[in-house]
Amino acid sequence: MNPKHTTEWRCTVAIWGAISALTALLPIMVIAKGQGQDDTEHEAIQYLKSQPTDPIAQLQKEIDMGRVKLEYDAKNGYLRSVLKNLHIMPSTQTLTFAKTSLQRERINPRQPRALYFNDQTYIGFVQDSPLLEISTTDPKLGGTFYLLPQMPNPKPKFIRQTYECLQCHSGSLTNGVAGHIMRSVYPRVDGQPEFRAGTYLTTDQSPFSERWGGWYVTGKHGFMRHMGNAIAKGGEEEVQIDREAGANLTQLSSLVDTSPYLTSHSDIVALMVLGHQVNIHNLITRASWHTRMAMLYEQQLNKELGRPEGSHLESTLSRIKSVCEPLVRGMLFSKAEPLPCAITGLSGFTETFAKQGITDKQGRNLRQFDLKKRLFKYPCSYLIYSPEFAALPPMAKEYISHRLGQILNGDDKSDAFTHLTEADRVALREILTETKPELLKP
Image 1: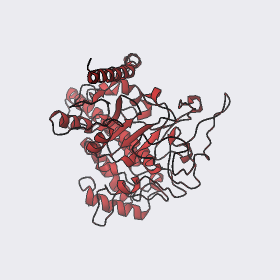
Image 2: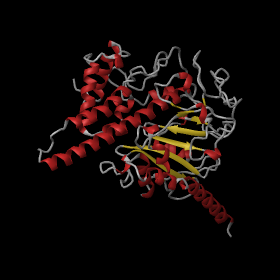
Image 3: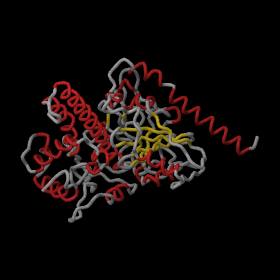
Image 4: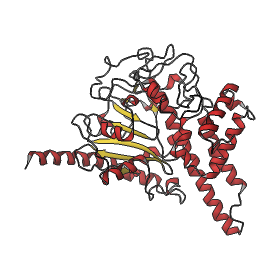
């Protein structure tokens, strides 16, 4: 056999072997959900039947039409080329060594999984793996998932994953929708989480002391302490993390060889943004799904009862409020954990991320950092400009627009928004009126 063909054959076997291992969990998924109500199958959602329009689906079209060519290199496969075509910065790199992904057998403290991200897409790279893992966000479907075989191909194919990823990415950890997850665990020396010690979802509301267990962290954070850069110790009675040993690390050379990755960092500011973004993505998807389901039910009921089309039930308005109010609060950083001391990232992420914002006439944008008392200078999520937010049903956006007006005009000064100073409200009102006028009108 031709040596080239032999190599390609071996790569193909390895790739499909890995895919088979990942999809081996499918029967468990079907048994677990087959008898219950699954919103992914709801008539208003049709997650499995729908054709995604997410960034990966769009990139695949460009590849198929010959307008984009992914470049392959021996060290990282398609990683650099995928990041370039999706406009994802290498400085977004974060490293996790916890065995919490589908490729857990390849992940450990000496061989962490790298994550790179932008506002819509997350790319997972594992050393010596025949696959890239991709988690992205579709404007209507929410979280969508793909694998990309890491072997040379004139027209590489992103392989959409559904059941096998939804087993973890559609449930209590994602607000009951197809979404994304960022977890903090107590990792053992091999990266296996010590689940009996508990795990934490990481958002901007998480106590600093509960963040990033099983992750590497570079950057300065003063006297605050996190769970990163550390291995859990302890026996049957108690499991502990030495938060002091992993604090304020500016480089990781004493813990792991970072030369196989695109940078030497797992930036603390990127990790903080990641936690915020994952949570907001899930809240947007939840608001979208449940509003669409409520509207479809109302439409069907109006037809059965002979009510005029467009008549709204009190229960519909209540359901929309129940899923949109958490989104409003999340986007305005209600109950976000304050920073008692300054945070400093070292990878260049802080500077490059802020430059990508939509700027008003005064030079203000929602991606500008504070990092002294809170994450952002202007406490409203930059995901308000995202395609996912834009695709929210009209009634959801009407509710959100109304609530933003109440809050930023000072009509609502309830406990959920006491963190907003008068200067914050004025600045946000001015920024959004100029840069998002269809949502917040003068």
